[in-house]
Length: 309
Image: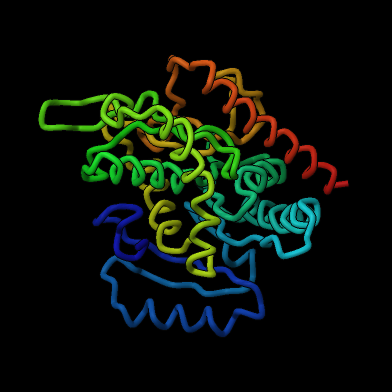
């Protein structure tokens, strides 16, 4: 997708730096061969390496998909401590060797907290340049609504994912609309089923990753890659007028969310910069959900910091 221009547009040549761990070096070489064999017109170079410094040198965009997955019988603290050490090392390499304007997207879970650790250990990268992926959840919410009201997914816009990329996230449709033959209609009005919107819809989006693992015996691949491209494309090239997207970004205290957390907000992007959409009405139901996911992020943050000592 990146080599085809899906991430940065059809006119932007790219050089791919691919990093993996030593045991995967041979497989990585195979991926490089395939990329060369595909003869993508926009692909100007491919570097396949197991050296983090080499991988980070001069990069303008870093998509961090590497992390330590939770395995059976592991406590959250064990996973956190493994990821803290991974993100600490990668942060230092990015800080020293990446381009000054490098934009970072963290995909590996726990995505919000991994992004926070990266921010801690790469203090010279502006906080506005470190984000995490909640676009996958945003796209999942769009997909659920489009199926429910039987419209094309491109006709649904302005859902919001608040909070953590975890099962506490809050998919919110209170400001979402659907483009119909008779103009834009609120999602709530078209769905006409608050019980579903406040219940099954939310849990389906929250649990979708687990449902895919159950079905595929592997975690999301295509949808995660596609939404990572969406996230970067909108960040770099801008969001369409009147449309916002969800991104995990550094909280400035908007909507009463504690500053210093990486939290998913509705954002618009222009000129390579994102801004949190302000002034949206938050009802009591939403407030409770938004605070619950913020609480989980604060717990993750203190768990991560305890792993640093």
